[in-house]
Length: 128
View (tube, rainbow, N blue to C red):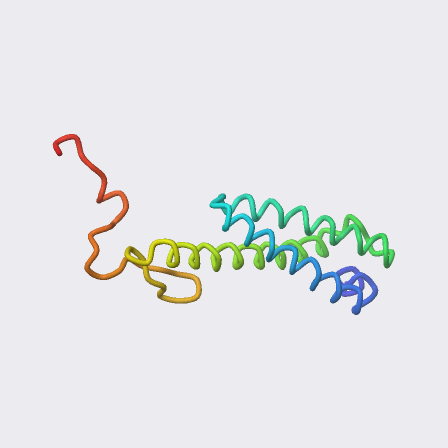
């Protein structure tokens, strides 16, 4: 079972996981920095997981259509892309709008205390 998951060669699996993990990080970063949806980053992560499986198949004769191997690669790369997206989204929000938002953690922000900016509640109504 782990032969199918690790593609018969642990060093090749680790090297490709690192290389494609960095590609997933860059895909998430590019989507966030371009103010695109997280769906774009996740779509790229699916393509990256497919490329990872293909290279394991081509280089080490791993099973190309192994669902467990693909699921593990997909989970890794979706997680990396989503974390990169959120990290960069938070960075952009607090750096471009410092008077409105402050960082509350690595992956979150909140409105600066004293500001009356609440998104939809701040919108004009028909009676205004």
